[in-house]
Image (cartoon, rainbow, N blue to C red; front, top):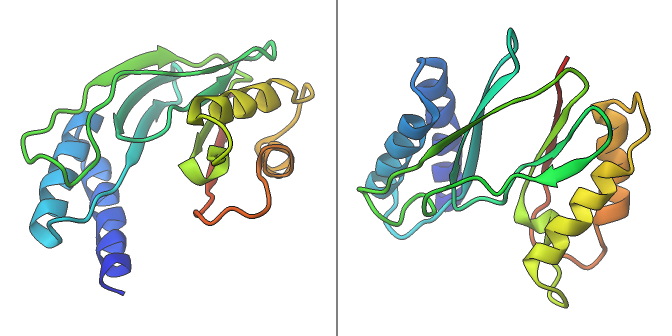
Amino acid sequence: VGAAATMGQLRSAVRAFATGGEPPDQVLARTNRLLLDLDPGLLASCCLVRLTPADGTARIARAGHMPPVLRHPGGRAEALYVAGGPLLGVDERAAYPVSELRLRPGALLALYTDGLVEDPAVAIDQGVERLRAALARGAAGEGPEEAADRLLREVGSTGRVDDVALLLTAFG
């Protein structure tokens, strides 16, 4: 129960720091220090994306989290192995570099927990590749809800013990 309460506080903190206008690297740095104060020894991963709809700019900061996967308007998909920092809760002085990219109308960005791509029988990179390939197979005009349902069917497997979360954002 204690860990769940702390995670709820972290979600609220990320939301508060992000809506306060702080850049993604500072949101993660402040959240990291908060976690160390709240519950030393508890670790968390996070991928924070600040999207500017007017021009499609996405600023991404990662704290030990899986790489986002981007499907471009033409259907090509790629895992975005952007620079990142350590898990939240590891080092109070940790830095979380920000990467910037432009999304074009029709792009679909996938954020997910490791539970979606983990499989004890294969390397985690193979799970990310499986997700990337499945995202690329999406039909033209497939919306985020349809894509999410399909990805969970195609990539998700039975017998997983870890949590699975998937967030898809369509741009344009």
